[in-house]
Length: 267
Ligand SMILES: C[S@@+](CC[C@H](N)C(=O)[O-])C[C@H]1O[C@@H](n2cnc3c(N)ncnc32)[C@H](O)[C@@H]1O
Image (cartoon, rainbow, N blue to C red):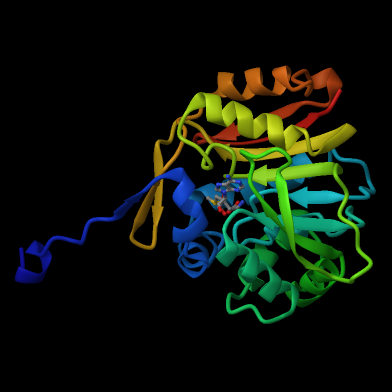
């Protein structure tokens, strides 16, 4: 072993779920998980299974909210051919700023690799440039949200035009790696699901993705604690909130390597 190898790596800073607000570094997150879609397994699984979940939505969806999008735009991009109006959101001011920068074409992160991965899975011929332009044209607002508050929407951070009004409910709410990461206890997870479901119109849809059984995740020198999610927690919380959990009612659950994606309908 060389002297360099003996030097211990500095320990990650331990952060609680609530620290997402001020300690989340959007650049470090994107570099760690989205630089190339093939680098991160969780991301690869989500992008691979996403089209199989999204095709269960109506061909045209009038409004979509990506809840807790972080600094990411892969969900709006994946929904560009169905959605007519897209709203995105996050709890951390730095993430909301990163989302606005992408909408305004000032992004420092290049989404090309992720777009190429999405278009390969969709078997579409659109270039990353066209995919992003189409999506940008559908973006209506970036919202300040907290899934532990009621109402969830705290503020409008950015909107495409002054005349835009933000709906109280959406036909589709998507939320990936957010609800179980926003808290550390089951009761708090249940509250987050309740609040997320309150944003869905009757007959509308929840697209939920996440990770089972994790207690932390880390990037950029920080480890964030999270709720250790079990499949039963997901089912119980959907049922409690009047969401479908049967195939006949439009429920589909896909899981691989503890990563899951689901679509559920508000009954
Ligand atoms: C692991 S990131 C997921 C980002 C993105 N959805 C993705 O798929 O990569 C977790 C996100 O949850 C957000 N979050 C944490 N607490 C939240 C809360 N109370 N309300 C809404 N979002 C929250 C964080 O700011 C962060 O952007």
